[in-house]
Image (tube, rainbow, N blue to C red; front, side, top):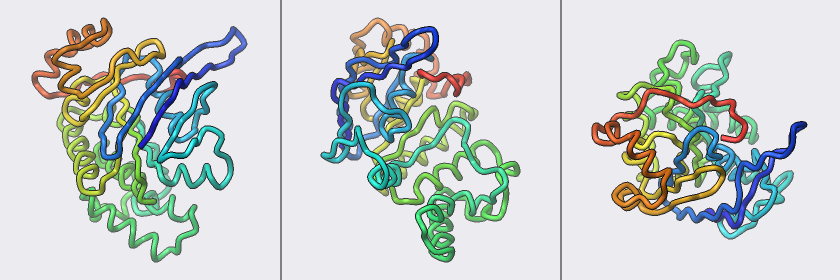
Length: 265
């Protein structure tokens, strides 16, 4: 289980301080596919990066599996990150490494033998239906295939949690559905708890059992996905639903994507 208790994040810059998150309280249960929804700049990607301490909170506490991780360093931090897989909008694959070598990379870092790493990588590539592409390079694959490689790599250390930061934003509608179905399969079969950052209401509707809506660094609404969609309580949720209504009804994700370099999103 993941708990955020009164979490805030402030970025310090030459032109002054920028508060990206304030007073965030969330509880993500084991087995959830938990969506965090918001517009560009709302703070959702900052929030997800706090969960594996790629960013550190300015205030508040982050509790994972009963332990306060907020000040983790060294070995504790490495073990934490091994237990939390992460996939990105941009795939973030090593272009000079083969598909197999991309998936074995986390295991090599951990000191696993070459044979054991390759065996695990082939197992995961079969899971994502890419074992026949193990000797290819990322540039030879489609976007959907590259994201499947990224998912396999994120699973290499058998993590309990997976963070998905706009993982389908660079994909077309059909491929988006395929990747979301794969993530749902992984959640169901492997029991991996997932935190899904998205601006797409349809992504949330299709895969998330619970969601939180973030606006201006604050959580403005939280609940079961169906309940939030049926009876939105905040202005921003109603606006997002009005904007995305055709996509929600047709079950196709919007084709626009967010700038991945926005520091506070």
